[in-house]
Image (tube, rainbow, N blue to C red; front, side):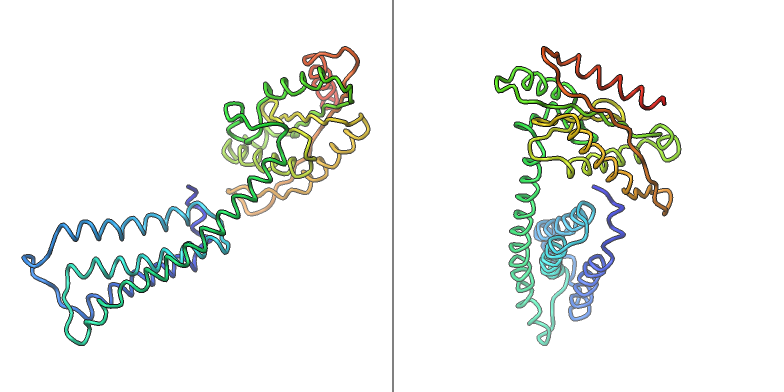
Length: 299
């Protein structure tokens, strides 16, 4: 969970606080405290657990999701459920005068309304996940193998890339393909200035931006550190260089804002491209493009 997201949910937090305050005011303002002998402590434990878990779910959602209609619907629904759960829990500590007995009658109504809203929110959340899954399928060449996924960038590791290049080299259709290697300029300096946590976040955002600029059949992997490698099937050298330039331009316009400062930091990329040759090998083509990139960065 990312608790820094809580600052972006001020209205929803105010709604939850209002539900807490209203339930306390209604219950203890209209009712009278029971004696200790009248309290059913097993009911207190059970109904209190429901209220507490509802509040925990609310905090978990607020600390895990950005603002949006799905987040709002989830919190509104859970807040209604929390309101009913608190009224039900406070019933164990107070009894109402005749004029306030209606409060115990209607305490379940907000919960029913909240469940209806949450059902809508969960449906929208499901649609959201389907859209994300379609994007992941779009971005990957072949099936996702989780043990070969880089933890920071969520891209495949270089070993997976080697296997995909080998498959391209062994392909009987003889179609051309190219390899592009990209390197973030002065990434070490950024890490020293802002820390590795911000560096990891920068790598993730750049990875997502790269994927947005690739085609359905292309594959992006993390090569090492701040270096990435792309496999571009059915692509000649000029097309590969053009695509790499497009990614470089997109990265140059990425306004990354480190947590330590409000102003944006911009970055540039260096890249090199190589086209597969006759009787090429996996390590040979990777070595060529890697050496070409190293040479470009020293110029």
